[in-house]
Length: 96
Image (cartoon, rainbow, N blue to C red; front, top):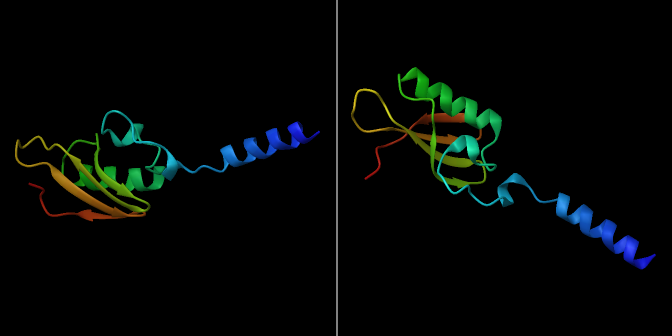
């Protein structure tokens, strides 16, 4: 009986891990990153699209609800930098 209770407790604790605990993917593509929630992803994509840049977002950094993405723009210039706090996203200062 103790083994069964232990197995149940382990299963419950394993399920308690959040997307924030997930390791980043081997690439930097936001759509592949479990730490990026769908509402934040859509808000960042909308901002990129509004500036006529690619909808393929890449992750610079993520810390909870604070995330920094970038996307290439067809103009050939610097990529658009996007900073999000939850679903509130705005254009950020260029990197580098």
